Length: 251
Ligand SMILES: Nc1ncnc2c1ncn2[C@@H]1O[C@H](COP(=O)(O)OP(=O)(O)OP(=O)(O)O)[C@@H](O)[C@H]1O
Ligand SMILES: [Mg+2]
Image 1: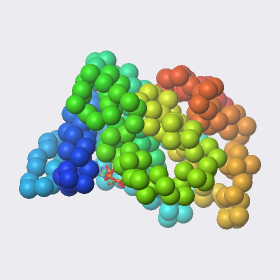
Image 2: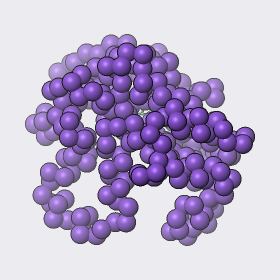
Image 3: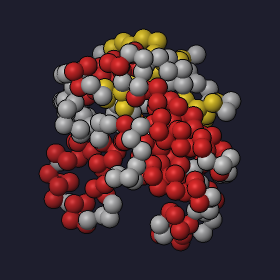
């Protein structure tokens, strides 16, 4: 059994879509991390481009949260430890030219199978060295090619719309941290996953209006760790640094 990701070649609507497909394929082909489903092959049929990968018969973390599973702090720590180990390998592989950042670390892109974590969806990933895929649109300017964000930015209705008038607190930081082509973008994503995994412990919906650190119950040391992952200025520089810090925390 395999997993097949089919991407419509809607090149007229989104001019970068074919390049994005080629980049995703190129990146997957070069990844050797065993917690990323193995690339098998790719093919195109009419307007549909397909990537065939090893199938992981697990559940996305988003599904586990949606169906009411409670992760305790020990389990969250274990998931983040596994995730940071994957990122350490992706950011610093043996062949340096293959270093990639994922840029879309979220619950729905993480699968859990037999207690092991797998990272999927390299649709927004980039090589850290832009020379590895020079034809990629926006490969050097740190904005996600072919992503919802870059296409929205070009949309004049969107520009005129409420979104930019509203000044959402923290929005700019969130956007920058998510889209940057640097390990920091993924470390920020790890922080988001950490916070999201505690969501089911909040029973009173009105609590969601408060800052997460006022609502979620966890040890002080782990909360400090999550804040460091989410910090733009005082955060960790590498996945290895974050992993060593996490492993030094009391279990
Ligand atoms: N190798 C795999 N084995 C099993 N399930 C997978 C695999 N790859 C992806 N999936 C499942 O398919 C879903 C969608 O895959 P992926 O995230 O790569 O596509 P996407 O088009 O970017 O989707 P989305 O826009 O929802 O992020 C994942 O959330 C996961 O549940
Ligand atoms: Mg996805």
